[in-house]
Amino acid sequence: DAGITQSPRHKVTETGTPVTLRCHQTENHRYMYWYRQDPGHGLRLIHYSYGVKDTDKGEVSDGYSVSRSKTEDFLLTLESATSSQTSVYFCATQAGGQGETQYFGPGTRLLVL
Amino acid sequence: SQQGEEDPQALSIQEGENATMNCSYKTSINNLQWYRQNSGRGLVHLILIRSNEREKHSGRLRVTLDTSKKSSSLLITASRAADTASYFCATVGFMDMGRRALTFGSGTRLQVQP
Image (cartoon, rainbow over all chains, first blue to last red; front, top):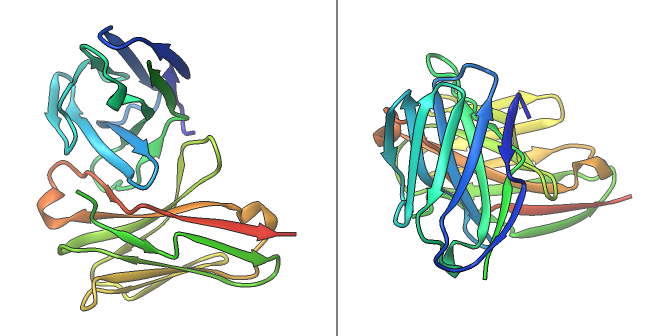
């Protein structure tokens, strides 16, 4: 998985609680992404980052925020978790420049009760 | 919104047979990529084809791209049980070049019977 780790790998939480997922990379890649994967929907982009402190929204960003204070870390926060946010969350990185391949972490399975 | 739709949604073949998966997309693209996902794992990049290319090979993989029909196909020749996985096409649209984000199809689940 090209030096990308996600934590936690599994989490069960209750509706209304805040949740933070962490993505850590050792590749020094410029771009980082958070996707969610749901049955029948493939992967959908939540937020992305194009550098330290530079982030922007994806297609399904409502209810999520992100932060990137260091090149290697990209945090995804659910401010107040809802059952509709039950999903598998994947972090991905891309080198930038001529590199167009994305490298994915192993995923975090989140269940919101 | 989803860019790509994949066909079939599921495919079951015998080891040694060829597997063909198709992907259609909606908007103009810069490139199209195929990824594989083993059960419970992250996605792994397989191959990238640019909008000015029509065919590309990588080992047992052959990808074609028809920009006039906004479609692509992935052919896996002489399949093996280890090819059992879900396969996704993903596009980078010209409007997405700045953020380099991928738009994924819903995937084809391939089962290769030994």
